Image (tube, rainbow, N blue to C red; front, side):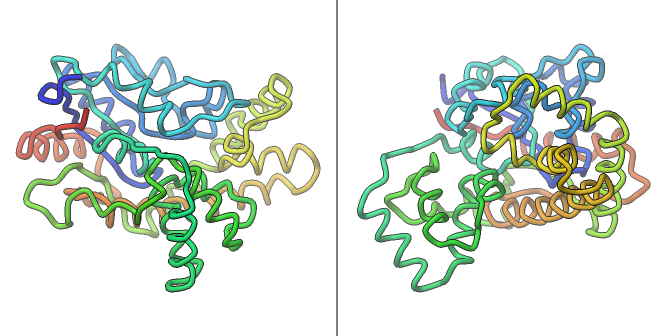
Length: 312
């Protein structure tokens, strides 16, 4: 891949901020392809619970990064990057959008994934002694948010360290610094941001709508086809709750409420990651802003700063 031609417009933000609709409008305007940077949308058959764009909604826009793996397989950041890399040298820069920070980082910086080493274990042990469990959690969040989300016991330091050693980022050195200090006159990405109460309201409406529009049927079909889901897919937000309801562990209302709570927690982690790990030009959304209005604001920022150059 020629580094000079490998560029992309990047749109980030927490879940439920409307990134997909805005990216779709801009892709239609620019004649761009879209690269989905969402670690859950890579799974085939996981559509409703991941808010995946439907075939009808995609229209004439070509998407990459969707439906790349069966939900009983493990899919890494490296797998995703290798799959989307061939589509980065198009004459018109693609639009990369999603809420998985590690995917965005890999797209911009590339990957370096040496094997775990004694030095790595020593580094993480020292970090634990100096700064506590929260430092390990933040390090794992910056490297692989889905790994933290699916960890059986995120308060267990041994499990956190083992998860850190499995990430695709370097484990023999401290966590990499932010790609560019924030704020920056030349942001790497444009981000959509909603006031927290408004975002929670949107998340509540979306989670409820997912269950009403067939999530339980989708999950029933999934577990019939794939009796043993991968750890990531099985603990995906909405899917874990649907499975718990279908197996009689919780009521439907509890499943919806748990989905809302976990989604709000995810949104908070995403906002924190993008705020500290990327240089982002933020578009603050008001409740009255339509996707078309937001697309205009995003387009102006992209016209001002240009696409981001990606590492080979």
